[in-house]
Image (cartoon, rainbow over all chains, first blue to last red; front, side, top):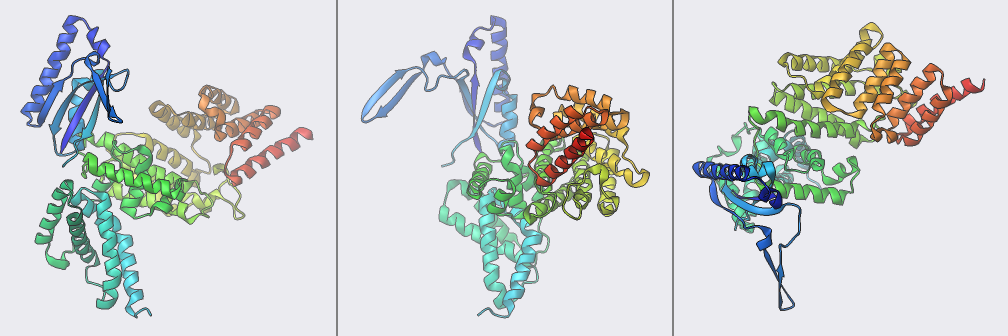
Length: 115
Length: 420
């Protein structure tokens, strides 16, 4: 089954980290991505630009509304994702627990809708 | 007009349902990874049995017959739906169908434990785990479960449907966890079984058959889990705890239905067979050597049961056990029980001191046993005014009429002393 791991964390806290710590954090993500790839379960993954770069679009009554900013203002923001292919939820949860994002934020695990 | 075989066929179907329902649902759900579809298929198979068995006689292997029919019904249903996500379970069933050695296959693998672990998965909302186990493993309907847990049947039914959808959509596995994860994973399973037992226990008079049955069913589940996981000390501890409590059920009320506190219970009304089974389970658990919450609580019960031989409970041991439990759970309820044991072992002043420490937890302000314990100990040291006030609060907070009567009697005995 395919699962999406959605990484939420406090963006400004990460940006405020001293350079050395931030680099260690990024290195941890690289190692995690590599581990997923080695295990043959990584389908896709990417980091997102900060929420300040977000634009939200909604079409209602034939009119297109374009709003500056993210869909929802929250204390923790969606900052990246991993899509993995594993046998079941337990396997997905054990990968989610190893994700560095689970230690400095939260990881939401969502199954992909099978078409 | 009913045919002659109808009664016999119905009885055979009912007997098979009682003995094998959970096993059949577990087997089908395990193959299909879909609890709701497994239940639907099995329901259709039972309906078919009620038509087929009266006409052609009860088959030699009713379980195998039902399984074969349920499999075909499930395959038909999957074909009708043609969802992509059904395809895998559908194919597994077709493969089973091809390899199944006709209707004589007597041994159906027992996947009930895997089903229980799926129902009590951490990804399932904790309040629905016990109802889910009751429905899938024991075949209770939503109305019976709803009334036992004081939830409207329609609401309960909706929650059960949602939980089953979550198992399927989120890909919750049907498997018994590995050794390394067992500690974390068995806890919600035991919790769900204990919640079931507590629901049944909350009807001490045993007047509501549904609730009393819940206690029986919880013990049945406890025996099942303990027998399938014989090396899990807490599974044995929970079984012992439930058996000790059940052994005293009859003694909790007098012949006229009045509440009888533990200290005044008639020992002849304790069920010795259940107590022996409980002691044996607790002994097995302690030999494994990993103490846990349920073993400690069972040990408290065991120290009470000592009264059968010595005439009094071993209060010093009980106080020490509650101390260990407090360190483990930090529960204010445990703190009260410890204070009561301390009062029995070392006198009411020491007990009141321990109770005062426990009362720092604000949650106790609305907890009846706290006020009843306080009232009792105050009365013992002769502070009757304060005792009466505490009884008043305890009475106001109690929901069980028999216990309320008991507390009111205690209070009026006090009043008689003060006014004389």
